[in-house]
Length: 315
Image (tube, rainbow, N blue to C red; front, side):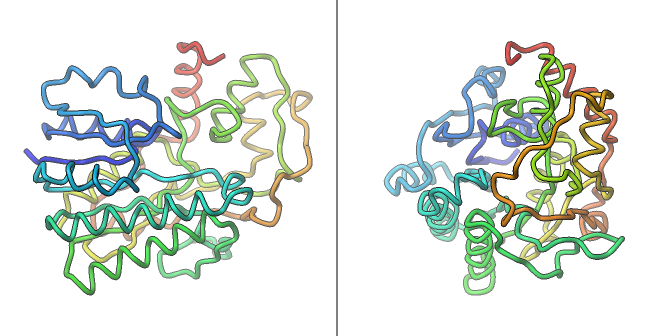
């Protein structure tokens, strides 16, 4: 049994990480400022015998962090971040402060208390995939948005603590994650938004020409990857991708979900300068180091997500 802090644990991916950690028998603390997360996401865990505490707070609150880390954690999954690309373009300072400065403050506490850190980065740091084998961790990065820039800066800080202080850290770059508990509004992922519009008999709006591709990873596969990087001693100082290993154009994704092309329209892109034309993950490193590979197909994942959306009051 480990004592674990999950920042951003009330968010979409965070709640699935918390669920698996509880299932695995660990004691869990969740820190979330609820700017992206929701208390409802973790409501089912609050009375779990190993769910120690939910703290509504900010990773930039130094006094709060100092108090929290007195709990003698073994491990910190750092998922708390500003994640919206357009928001980062409109207000880069907030994204930089949360994603880079906030990560620095968490790192400082992990160093002080010798706590392993798993840092959630993003596939948005990459340039477009140019190979049929997909993007590898050694491929070049291209900060096409302040969100990507802030994440790259934070990645470098995380690696510096591994090299300078021998702090066990790992950087993870999940590709486009979707599934139950993802927001279905403007801040949500494309799969959730498309499904909601389909069920509400609305048009599915595609930004630009729709030829841009995404590698879509089901959230439970993602959470399993996140959790296992924390358990492994083989991944310290590493950067590791996770994805499905196949990509799909947004046009084809819309057709797969709605199955009626007359309900699909194209609109002007809100941030074409930050669009990555092709995202395709190579997850060979995760398979080699962790034995991880995705288990849920895109078709099955869409089915599960649609069933969840139908079961909620999010329509």
